Length: 190
Image 1: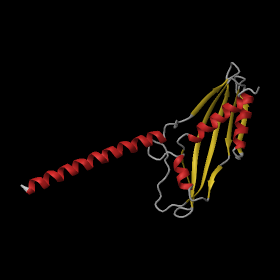
Image 2: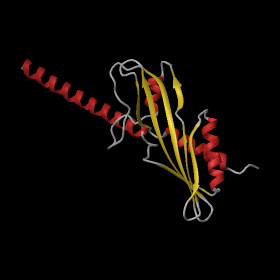
Image 3: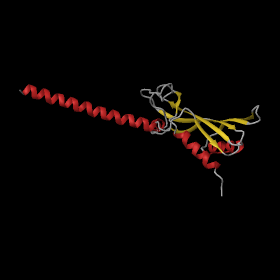
Image 4: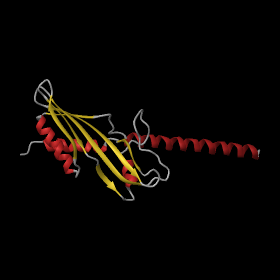
């Protein structure tokens, strides 16, 4: 009889353990989806402003972040409309702190979502630099308004195991923030 009671108690403990682990897994899935809620393949925005105003706002917002402009190509298309590419140089947003790894994780794609490049797992890595690059494509529309497409990329430097920079996708936090700042910059002043 004791054997049966011990067996039943053991089975109940295993069942309880499985339930708790399943609950923890559900919580982790929610955290991942929360972490990726701003992610998009590309970030698009339309503005009632002219091409020149949008290009100036993009340049100002990049330089306000203490980043340099790496590429600034603005030209007229065959339709007589303007199209431009403004690309920042590598913007260093964290360097040499103990929290570099945590900060990189907070803005990165951490788990595989299809073909996306994710933050690499390198056992023993010491992440010492975090950088970001912004690439904007601006198009003038026939009605005088403008469209903007943004793509961003994170890179981090491991100075212990690989001694090189690694590149991967952002989860959308920095892209969303810079688009908000561009919209603020384009607001009419009173």
